[in-house]
Image (cartoon, rainbow, N blue to C red; front, top):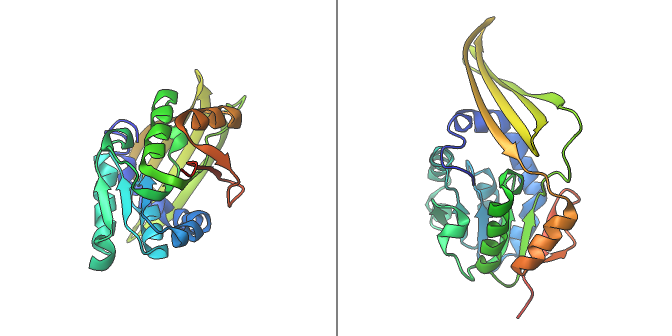
Amino acid sequence: MGDTDDYAVSAEFYDLLQAESDRRLAERRFADAADRARRSILDVGAGTGIVTEVLLRASRVPVHAVEPAPAMRAALLSRLAHLGADRRARVTVHPEPLEAAGLSGIADLAVASNVIACLDPATRRATWKAIAAALVPGGLLLFDPPPGRLPDEPEPAVRLGPVRVGPDLYSAEVTRRPDRGVLRTVFVYRVQREDEVLREERETFQVWPAPAELIAEELDAAGLHLVTAPNADLMAARRPAA
């Protein structure tokens, strides 16, 4: 959902290192709501399509998958290619940012997984407005919120993998540190064969903290009202019924 060059490095490694954990998380967070959708579902920042696939399997309605980053969209379309013609027929892929897609009154459920924290404040506010426009009256938004504040110190490094592909081990080290008002997140990907590092790739992302009170104010300004979320790690908002 950021610059379209974002994820050019990470797209190669994302599914290998994160797909299974992300799928389990998406099923826990979104499957029940998707099963109750009756109009269509909006997937904001679809990435490689892990959440999109969960939404398709859990529902019987069309799904709008918004993904402006070409590298992630290529992985998304590869995933859709393996889902079967019946499920592919229910997906519309939107290759532009949500605020440029012009979607109006099309969905009774919107989900934004691992997206909102990656948006700068102006883009975040524009995204709320675009989601509100895309939802029908009474429509529900589910999202994981950004961190409420910056940490005082760099966070401990997190390791993803390793995952074996033939003779090679793929892994990543993720570090996050506060830097001039944002949480700078660095992914360092490595491919190793025996004790030799064959490749090392790096990609940096920015996370914008926002306290829950600010998120509530922004949602209200966009015409969305906070409601009780189905999971403790989510926030939820609803467009008021007409």
